[in-house]
Length: 191
Image (cartoon, rainbow, N blue to C red; front, side):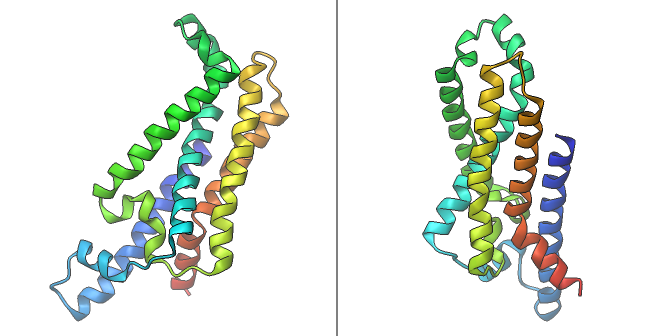
């Protein structure tokens, strides 16, 4: 989990560095450009289908993250009077609740500084069709990770360690895929 959170922070930091590099270069030409104005000027639309899949991927990321954190906490939830969460339908209902909260978070994040807007992270990067496919492939990996975690949650305390490790690895790979355009831009700019 620490590697996952570290990768999320590194991805956002690199996104910030990419944006600041662009801002620094353009502010040398004109000092009257603010960061928000620059963001609006360099934003490109990648299509509504990709935007919807990218938002769904981030929502699926948060759902999968919560599901991966959940199995060891099931005994505590049961002792606090939440037996419904330990059932299959309770886990599905819980996923819907987390998805709603994640969607609200992504919507509210539009008011954050430009480098923290997860829902708009791809708008300043040129993306090829392969980059878009890799980003949208992450949603499949995140669903597999979630299903694996649901299996561990239902069968708790008989947790399959292989399934748990695979679930965390899929979550990590999916996060790398979500940050592909950010890392790609950083590597190209450093050449």
